[in-house]
Length: 239
Image 1 (tube, one colour):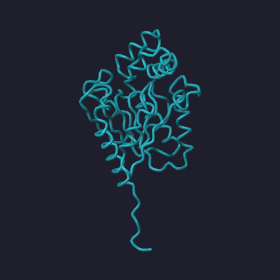
Image 2 (image 1 turned 90 degrees about the horizontal axis):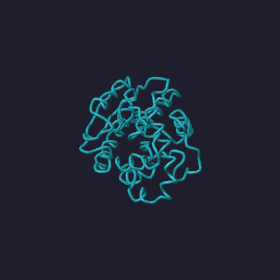
Image 3 (image 1 turned 135 degrees about the vertical axis):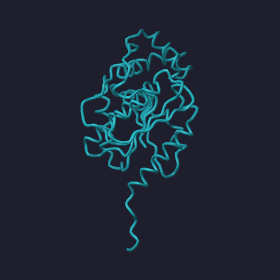
Image 4 (image 1 turned 135 degrees about the horizontal axis):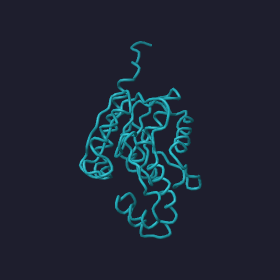
């Protein structure tokens, strides 16, 4: 289970998820360039650049077997584009689970990435996408604000990239009070794949994940086990 963070987020957001994962499903969080242990790497300026970096990393991982992708918010469309990249390379994911984002063709344009630093900080306070104690530290704000702005630019200028059509089944999760995605925008993911698509709403806002972590981890675990069950090769009954 490969986990893609939200805009401005990092792999550490999913640390507690990996601890809660069962023994038979491995949760691996993607670290985007420009943050934490990849802080010194240049931040891609658009979706294609980010997909090139992450897709290359995944395709180079020779230990990867059955793969399911999960992404929240910006991470949802990153996971979607990675799924298409893997499909084009002949290694399609077994499933895609997306959260808190409209269907790719319904992505909302925005201007937040053009805001002043103070306006950008206020937007982060409004969405609660960043710990408030970090926003109260000017030095930390100046260190990570360029990455935040880049993620907003990537999200607000994103349009589906040209390429193959997704065939994997898609599960769509969202908060029923999330101002960033409506029920109809979540339903729009049906048009993003030739595979099956189902949706599920959770009580809460954009970061409903924080309140329902165990339920979401359980859902992802069940999805992974169902994929493994249907794709498993029968064990031979004789030597």
